Image (cartoon, rainbow, N blue to C red; front, side, top):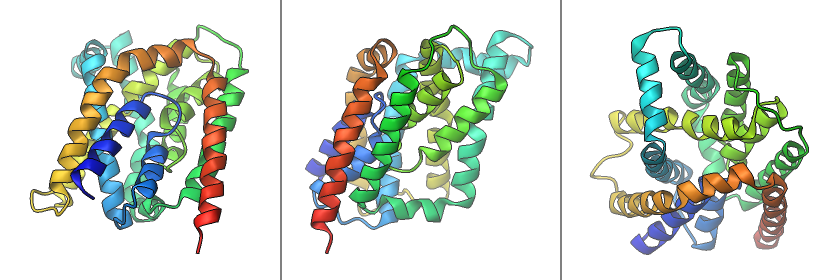
Length: 266
């Protein structure tokens, strides 16, 4: 992967991370269009690096919320901040289990299979369509909700299933307020991304000697910059717009991806 391709993919990640359209799915489609020939393990690692960049941009935008979560974890008091922090921790459990015990199986979905990505985008479209028809409420996220939403986040590790789309849609279908669902969705992924990056660094999977280190670095910077520029207004768009708009988009892109996959199949 050359620097230009990495930068383009970084921009795609930064622009799509905060919309319910699957940034990982768009990355896989982008890799296929750019002729990326990385093996699945390298492809997944590059995806994680770009997600780390947008996680940092999320921290910048939600710095006040992140500080409240850290305070809640450190004070050990039974207050709203501590309860919210505990919900974030609970939401991480399903994804941590998948990451620890099924990482090699997960890697196989990041090898440029655009037909699979297209099919998963159709699933995302269905989730968004159902969520758009759910009744709006003002209910906050409960502890039980956080575990179920965490399960949706774990499933969204598959490329084509939008993480924000799956978690926000699941929250809304559970009766959670859309604004609270969006806030919880964007914050719950931050510790997971940092944990994944720490694991890769300490295990030696991401090193200065890596063949694609400089390409990954360029992609990281592009994703971080695009994420900073896009985060605020895209979050507002998600909160205030009809999810059916994104459902239609995912439906069209999914159908095109499936058609392209069938057409290009040997």
